[in-house]
Amino acid sequence: MHATSSILLSVLPCILLGSTAKAGNYSLKQDNVGSAFLDNFEWETIDDGDGGRTEYVEQSEALSSNLTYANNNTFIMRVDDTTQLTNSSEEGRKSIRIKSKDQYTTHLMIADINHLPVGCATWPALWEVDDDVGVQNGEFDIMEGVNGQTPGYTTLHTNSTCTVPSNRTQLGNATFNDCQSTAVQEGGDNGCAVASIYASSFGPVFNSNGGGWYVAERTEEDFSVWFWARNDSTVPDEVKNGDDSLSTANWSTPLAYFPASSSCNFDTNFKSLNIIFDIALCGSWAGNQFSESGCPGNCIDYVNSNASAFSDAYWDIASLKIYLPS
Ligand SMILES: *[C@@H]1O[C@H](CO)[C@@H](O)[C@H](O)[C@H]1NC(C)=O
Ligand SMILES: *[C@@H]1O[C@H](CO)[C@@H](O)[C@H](O)[C@H]1NC(C)=O
Ligand SMILES: *[C@@H]1O[C@H](CO)[C@@H](O)[C@H](O)[C@H]1NC(C)=O
Ligand SMILES: *[C@@H]1O[C@H](CO)[C@@H](O)[C@H](O)[C@H]1NC(C)=O
Ligand SMILES: *[C@@H]1O[C@H](CO)[C@@H](O)[C@H](O)[C@H]1NC(C)=O
Ligand SMILES: *[C@@H]1O[C@H](CO)[C@@H](O)[C@H](O)[C@H]1NC(C)=O
Ligand SMILES: *[C@@H]1O[C@H](CO)[C@@H](O)[C@H](O)[C@H]1NC(C)=O
Ligand SMILES: *[C@@H]1O[C@H](CO)[C@@H](O)[C@H](O)[C@H]1NC(C)=O
Ligand SMILES: *[C@@H]1O[C@H](CO)[C@@H](O)[C@H](O)[C@H]1NC(C)=O
Ligand SMILES: *[C@@H]1O[C@H](CO)[C@@H](O)[C@H](O)[C@H]1NC(C)=O
Image (cartoon, rainbow, N blue to C red; front, side, top):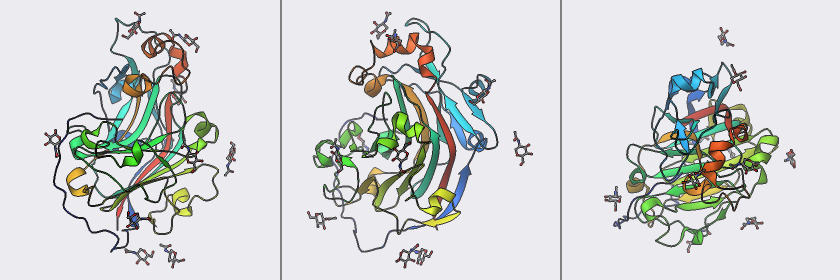
């Protein structure tokens, strides 16, 4: 996801780097499995804007129309794949956007995902923002992508100028001038994006592999994202088992890594954020890349006319475990 606002240059105080160990140790705060999502998340009905073709529905409608399905151990949220639309009719194709009722600063999350939305026009995202405020409070896009095409991306957005070192240790491929230009992050438009190096972390291959684990950590010193596919034997046991307490101390190099520095002050750029899962359709990314992704015609007509093309546009989330530093 993305947000737009204009530029503010601020004076950034120095941040202490490297002199302390990473927090590392965490305790399980909230375990979202199946119906727990219904209690711990809010179904948002906000407008995606930006040429999107999505109509997010309330929880009651989502449940009665089965766009959301939950039982003790299953949680599914999907796009309507039966209704034909026209340009003049509805706001868009019905879909789901949920946000955590709680907000978080430093935390770790393990998203154990069985299936993510794929197909032309889709723009699924797992991200963190305060959408009552916007990018002024920072935005951490843990994973997103469009039209079912790899790579998936992890991106950090800030309101004011913020850059991260190009030599930081991560597996992913930095984009947009390696996040070194002062124009890159300010105003939140482009953000500092990292492209996944794994074919299995997004799109149909993620699903045919049975999904996997996205893990995101926010400390006072850095943001990190790891990904392990379902069949990756190197997934830490504590992630695979969803242990009640765990430590990131000995984990492998993250896929994406954004350290705080004298040119990226986390205190001023990042506040308390909600966790969001959604499935947007068309809009400024999926729509603009529609043809480039090999999709036919134009995105809006495709969404309106091709209801059955959205049968794979669903999240099946085995669990979302949220941990706090211990
Ligand atoms: C964010 O940017 C806008 C536009 O430049 C500015 O008005 C606002 O003060 C900024 N907010 C923060 C917290 O820096
Ligand atoms: C984290 O836990 C390990 C043992 O599990 C312990 O050795 C270490 O001191 C802890 N680190 C912090 C920062 O508390
Ligand atoms: C609702 O969705 C679930 C999960 O996909 C499915 O198992 C169930 O059959 C659906 N229920 C109806 C009434 O279609
Ligand atoms: C859910 O779990 C509770 C408690 O274990 C059990 O009583 C109930 O039958 C379960 N419901 C379903 C739909 O499996
Ligand atoms: C529907 O709207 C889109 C976007 O405005 C436009 O490109 C398309 O031509 C319209 N389709 C029809 C059938 O009018
Ligand atoms: C990155 O470069 C800076 C100087 O430009 C250096 O101080 C720092 O140690 C380097 N970090 C890594 C991980 O190589
Ligand atoms: C991404 O990084 C991998 C591994 O370093 C490299 O093989 C690949 O060519 C890169 N892809 C792009 C698009 O830069
Ligand atoms: C996981 O399974 C896919 C095929 O579904 C295969 O291509 C890949 O090599 C496997 N990865 C590992 C680590 O076994
Ligand atoms: C990390 O590895 C070191 C060296 O093997 C070990 O001493 C330490 O206990 C490990 N920490 C955790 C939290 O597993
Ligand atoms: C619907 O999907 C089919 C198959 O991908 C495609 O050929 C057709 O152009 C699509 N229709 C519209 C209106 O986009």
